[in-house]
Image (cartoon, helix red, strand yellow):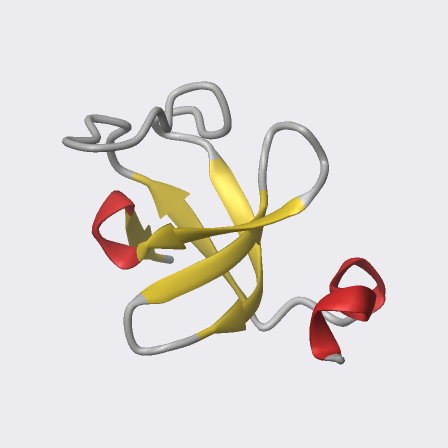
Length: 67
């Protein structure tokens, strides 16, 4: 199961958080606008990044731009 070793996996790329204005979920507790995050996994819809809590979490790609 890949999700159990995400913290130890190499970073795929880095992305910058553009905004934390979420329509449905509270995102501003886990992300900070203008901060750069390490992407550990990626799907069509989500980036799995190391968030402000130090854990890997999945967020819509709308919140980020690639560096």
